[in-house]
Length: 519
Image (cartoon, rainbow, N blue to C red):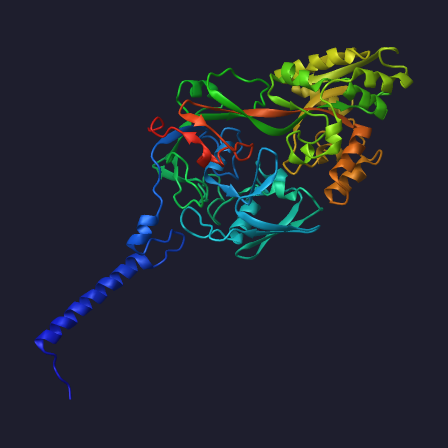
């Protein structure tokens, strides 16, 4: 038999029903995840735990004519900004060591590299970072101007599961991790030049109409930077960025100094070590320089420290070996320890004497091609000519246009040439030893150097065994590795962790006066 509730019972039922409806509404508002968006806090305790974006802002230059999508950037103005909003599997420190960023661990074999992602990683929208996102980013990076050369030796990238990335190599490579520094973005957010990708760096994009800026990514896994926003100040390709820093219009500017000079500035500055090798190319078809001892003697007669100071205004680091002077592997090399950046004319003369050359022999006349538009190289060419005259090698410097320079190289109409090349972070020398962009005058198949190089790259022999073969043959003459420069305004008390592909990657460690930077 059915019984109707009493008035008291009915009132209780109404209160319970109302409470249940409130709970259901709360669950629908706060408890349900949203695809592609951040998970929202489910209670007061979680809300309190969310980090607060810091106050203040700083300003950086950017070109609106170039993309802000890292896979479409083409200029040295926008390229440094990538490290503000993106992270990679690895980054390179000042010693050109690969340091795990999104990568927790790796297993490197002859054919593959397996990388395990750190757990709990999320993009700025709260969605998880997965191996599929890495594979998506790789597909864009391998076709991009900034990263394609880093990834030349990687045949494919796949995601066996959400936390594992598998790279298949074309050839064994002991330095393969150095190339895995491409930015990782969320799948589907960076396929077009105008896309502002969802990423997981210190900052994320925000857009007010057509104006784009960067705001603090409070979901960043790590310390937040001292300021909460980065203003993008539009400049032109002809803008002298150092003057804007001096005037306080921008907070930072970076230059790779590729134009061949350094603008005077009153701002604080720090050098950025580049992997740009300056070298003397030697034509082996020259009757003298086809002899390894002659090439080696020239190298011994050169004082690299004078070139760095007089030729490059100290925006370089002396080098005798083909690999970056600042690379940690070179610092540990016994062959590197045996070399000197100072000239050794006595040793050079002893090596030249059997060929009737040197201070006690006949004069040796040669020409040195030099690009006339680069004052760093022009000044260095003069230093080279002066130094080689000390061992009776008489150099005529030919400062020529870019067209004339490459025409002479292509035709083989040169004795020596002064060149600069940006080597990939994997430290490969294919440009010299595989008929690449810097192989003029070199016969890679002569001697055993190429074999030693391949064995070193494959992990079969130690670095020093290859370096000894290089010193003996000296197919070209390394002179120095060039630097770039980061300038910063008075609102920045100090910077830290700056390296070429990671300029702002440790901005959380910088000492920034947030009160002064308010704006």
